[in-house]
Every structure is written in C-alpha cells, then in structure tokens.
Image (cartoon, rainbow, N blue to C red; front, top):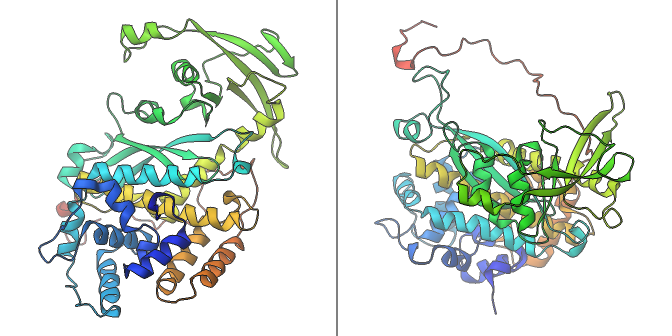
Length: 458
C-alpha cells in the first residue's frame, strides 16, 4: 500500500509520473499534502487551477529557485501545463498570490514537522549517537518587507528611525543531528516580554522525548530547562551557563576535569507560577566536563560542558567532547536555510504570509535533506558529509528531466552519485570570525523614509 509519509524520493517520483502530477510532486506528493491540510485543502482560485497541492508545488519551486520571484514560479507552471497538453494558465501572478494567501498556517506548520520527523525516523541506527537521537537547537532573526502590517506584528529595532528599518522576527529551530532535518520551529517578535530564544524554545521542547539527547549552547543551559528535560527522561549536553562557577576539586571525581556536582534549585523566576515552581525538584545532579579545543595556529580554548549522562563507563569524556563539538552543525543548518536558500529576508507583505513563506523554505529544506540522506545510505556515508548547496543545485537542474524520462531508477542513481561527489570537510573545531572580505559600497545609511529625500539628495 502506498504510504506517502514514509515514501522515498524514488517512490514519489514514480508515483508522480503515473499520476501525471507537476514534477515537484516527486518531492512532496499529493497524499502527504492532503493528510496535512485535511479540511483546509480545496480550490484556492476562481479559475480552478490552483488547488492546495498545485499552489504548494509552485510555492516549493519558488523558494528553490535563484530569484525567488512569483513570475518565474508561475512560468514553470505554464511550462508544465503546456508540456502535458493542458491549457496554459494566466502569466499574471495575482491568482497565484491569492491562492498562496489562503494556505492554512497550522497545516503548513504540521507539514514541516511531519516531514522532518518522518525523514529522521527512516535514518539507520548507525547514524545515531551511541543509540540516542540527538536534537540540537539554535536561534536566529529574519527580516521581512517593510509594510505597516509587518511592522505592527514584528516591530523593527528601537534604534532605527521609522521608515529606515525592516520588521524583524526571532526564530528558534530544532534540528535532528543525524539527518539535519527541521523537527520543530517557533517564531516570535524580536523584542518584548517572553520573546527571547529560550522562551520560544519552551514552546516547542515537548518534541524532546525520553532517551533523546538535547545538544545546545549556553543559551539553553538554564537550571529549569535542564531539570524539565531530565524529568521527562531525556538527557542534556549543554555548555555551562556563564554565571555558574566551576571547581573541579569538589563533587564526585570521575577523572581529570570530569566530575559530578549538585545544582540546587534557584529562586522562582518572574515568568513561572508558584505551582510550576514547586513541581521542580530541589536539586539536580550534573556531570561537569572541561573540554580543551586545540587548533593549529590558535590559542587552546577551554569549554566546560554540563550533561546529565552520568555513567562515565558508557559515556566517556571523549564521547561527550566529540558530541559537543558537533553542535556547530546547527549553525551550518541555519546557514543553509538563511544564506543558501535566501531565507534571511522574506518578501511577503503580511505577517501570515511571511510565516508561511518561512515554512515553505523549511519544508523545501527538509525535502532536500531527504535526498541527501538517501544518497548517503547507498554509499555508507553520513548526510552531513554531503554538500547541501550542491545537492540543491543538482536537484533543481535534474528534477524536471527526472519527471518525464522513463528510466527512473537509472536517473535516480545518477542523482545520488552526483550528490555524493560533493563532500564537505570535517572541521569540527574551525573558527569562523564574523568579518567580511568584500567591502560594501560606500553609500550613506538611510536616516529618514525614502520618500522624504529630494532628487539628488543623499
């Protein structure tokens, strides 16, 4: 029986050819879309061309393209319809934008989460870390079109004059370490009460379950977050909070720079109710490890890690150090989303459209990750050894051909082989300074709204 939520790229490609669907159905099939949208699916335009599935396929083609424009996305739909002997739809983008406006937000969010978890569930056991699923977290900010609606919901930074900045959104993403897929995401304002990264993280941390390992930097190392995950049966590997002091002469000594300590419950924070505060234990036992990172030509850095993996026989200091050094993978995943897929600045003019545009990027990102995982499985590699950018470019060029040629198996093997040839270096301790080599053009910064400038004034 056909099961779209677990189908491989090869299976979906064959099913899309048999169903005569748009070629992007090989990335996301009609059944998976119907399961996610349910009653929210239907005809989204008066011409009865943009169904939920077609709108989503065109949306995927838009976020995967270089220019991200609506005109080219609609042009690809026209090309497909003409190639199939169907009547060409209008090249005007209005109908497509109206249909995209009607995409249900909850269903789009569900689609991102279910695809990410389905791909992660298919990962072989050898990709796990000592038998555990590892989930990483990281946060970032996204800017969007400067409209009154976007500014009302996601205000710009306070230091910028009105009309001189962009609305800004804070985003927290949970990634699966083994496959790199997006498992869950939360969005909020950049500033204001309960808008920090850790506040957004608490909205979605329920996805971290028993036997999972949560891997993150010190932003997520508060006592209450560690205690909450540990009470759930999950384990944590986080960088020590900068306000905690370390004394390796105390506690239960496991070895050099490796001991167990007791962390008492701190006072109740303002955002927590008294009842919730009393549910937490009086203390937690944490293993504290000092990791020395040595890079040729650089000073040796020392990082202190806190973890609930207390069994030093099963989880050695070297194992935990190696795992924490892979935390950088979350940064690379965000770079793939923001830089490679151009998600750093979104174009939509209304908040709900912006949120769906970001979800479409994450959905396309997950589907590319599945192709990388399947390519890695066929050669004993790991997904993180394959270049995301090269896979995106290869898939974007080959996908239209894959959908019309009958030799599906042969071309899929060529696709996987092409992806595997583009490997990335294994550099867990690399240092990437936030500096630019290319000099920006020497234009003055905008100090007032553009319409207030006179001709020739700068």
